[in-house]
Image (cartoon, rainbow, N blue to C red; front, side):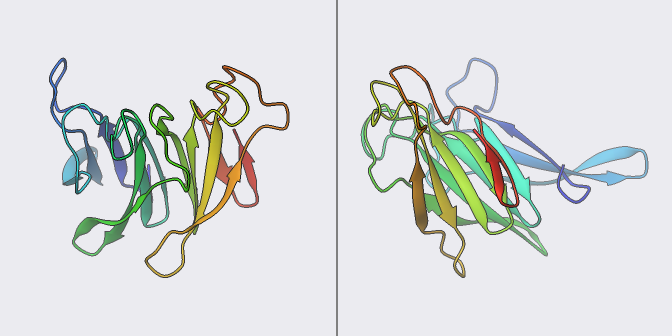
Length: 173
């Protein structure tokens, strides 16, 4: 729920299909909800799982696509959308500074104001599938990466970054 607008993501268009994922928005009208908008990744496609994860803050939303294959199978990506007067539009596609196959970047997402975080639960910096989280900060319409976080005690199969939330200066991973 974002400023009274409900955002619902579906990682594929219908159960069991291989359709691209999307995000649909609903707005309240009296006691009912009406469809307002529907948006998807500019490069979405079957099996990329766009919308697998979703978070919103103010006029921004972030959606993960952990199965995007830009840098090898399941390397992943995330997308920032901006809510304008006529609906939602993609502002940025986020990628890690060190993309790799099977990292699942986008499996966890969070956004608060001008800061976004994206998890890559299968990143291997601290052992196989130890995981990591990337921090992005808005600069105009760009969202450059600021930092890469790993757990202080990272170990094989920790899956750090599977779930993320951020509020002001605090984050929970």
